[in-house]
Length: 371
Ligand code: OSB
Ligand code: MG
Image (cartoon, rainbow, N blue to C red; front, side, top):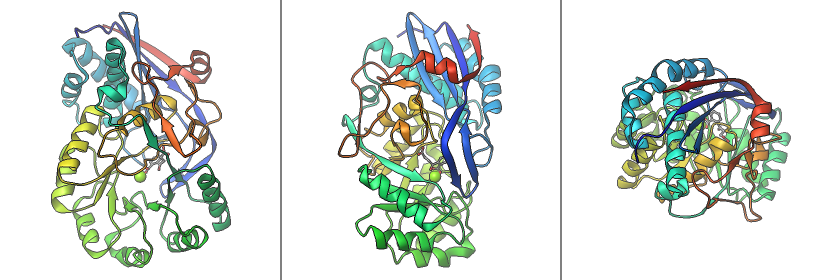
């Protein structure tokens, strides 16, 4: 494949959430991701840089990612003219940090390349199956009854596993209540870095419950103290925020800081790095699963493609379009099967089509850059 991208559009879209998503670090009622569109040779490749609306999960914001894309990543892309998405990932690694910005461009080039070859993205990535079990992440609720209702609704839809957000003082009771109401529940919790090692006693108490895992209990950049906590508790720790690269994963595996890794392609700089982490973990017999960032269907479909790989052993945070938004920007909308799976499409690239009307309705700014 020779370099064929002629122009790149950066669409900032505004997605109002159906209901606020509350976590230990804040409440999200609207997302403003960047939809990156690569055009050339009659092909359009798409991806989403699924940046949160504030720098409380990661240091990046929509504006910082636009800046890095416009001033650095895209000029480097046009100058170096990498032949493959993997080559592009290597070029972009020169940029320190800023994984969401790098990932947006890199993933759009994967879709562009797959469409150029006429193959589904999930097959190009080496996917091992054409459907994946759906999981759902549930924000902190105002009351336990509200939480039980929400969980019951998702179990009725046949979601294969439930993740709830926790925060100090709001973990033992919700977990106890959910196992009481739903004894067979496949349950995990996500702390989003809300605890310190000094609070290990809370996690020892949680050992009374068979949680699938505890996601990111400690500081968002920590790997060492997680290894100390993991030694003290039985439930497996899963790292999210702490893993921004294969090098981080290598450290976490070597230090036994976790027994599971949540891979989000946006958080790690793209699909090339996600594949590297997947392979590293597989070789260390450590399972992974695919996390989410409240993506629109564009990012969601890329996560679905990644999650078809063999070492994705747990259902991810990949839910249907209607979970977070009234209207999606892809067609058909992403829907659960009656038995709680999401099916990949066999069309080229992400498989789903962009609903242009819907995209332009939700777009708040577009800039176009040319080679
Ligand atoms: O920590 O996994 C997280 C959403 C935004 C930012 C961080 C996280 C999340 C979620 C929801 O848990 C995942 C999803 O359903 O897309
Ligand atoms: Mg998380």
